[in-house]
Length: 212
Image 1 (cartoon, rainbow, N blue to C red):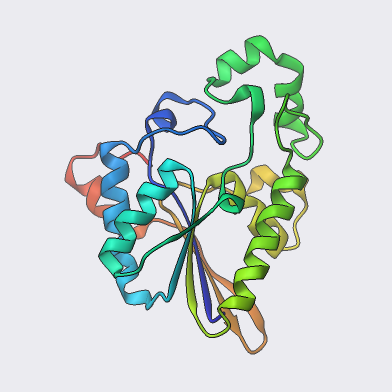
Image 2: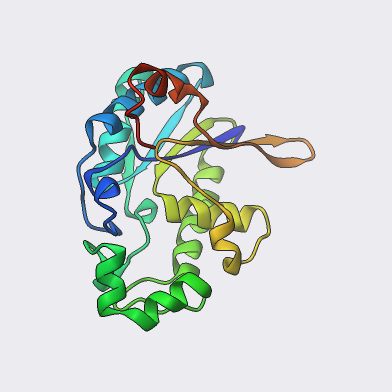
């Protein structure tokens, strides 16, 4: 692989409502659709050879928009799906706090140790995404690859890439349709862009209603 570009899906209705999405689906907002189109235009210059995306609707919609713009058909894979948040999915933080106070406290203070009822766990999610990236790296030796996934999963991969601990989970941030770029150089892979949203300035300058 020559270049790996990791991006999060566009803004969703549940992002606005503050609901935990996990493996459940929520549609892109109007701003989310605009973000995806702008991202597609931004990625034209990256000479992308392959697109891989989560099979969940919000990532799939983002991938379809980008694919149409850059002329590439996405491949969808469950390994790129968001972390499973079990019984928390569809709930707001206030609702989780009301029904699962101790588990939420642990999630906020020790996310690597937290047990979400019927959820997946950070360690399992990290193994899933790291294995997937390793696999597609071998399949795309000389290619520029775009991966469209979810905030938690992308953060888990970056933690592994940067040799950070799962306990550092909250030290990283991933905004909707942000760009992370890893270039593979002679001295090894290098993170050259992180959570980049500069191309979105057109939204903020337009009506100041863009939510990222």
